Image 1 (cartoon, rainbow, N blue to C red):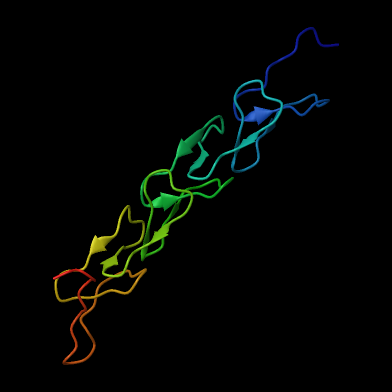
Image 2: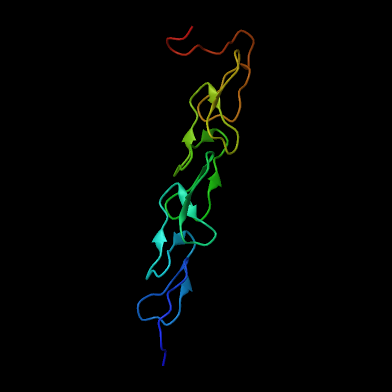
Length: 134
């Protein structure tokens, strides 16, 4: 028989009654000596050792239990530690993986969730001013 019990390494766990440690599934973590793995909250993902959750950088997001931080789509942005991306307001735009939306230059327009700004399509049309703007 066995003389001692070994503790499971970080990133692994031993379900009750098991004789061996097994790796946590994707998107989950375990500190040393755990009997189960925990799901990382939104805005975080497991580190490479799967022993702790790390925060996603700005411009990237991770939903609850995700195993990688993904870049925000064009027209959306995310602050650091975001669980999802937010759409850009009209008059602003964002490229792939943006941390924030940028304002369109004077004379250009952009509808909500835009990846760039444009000139008005017809002669005689100009971008409308924001309410209360000048």
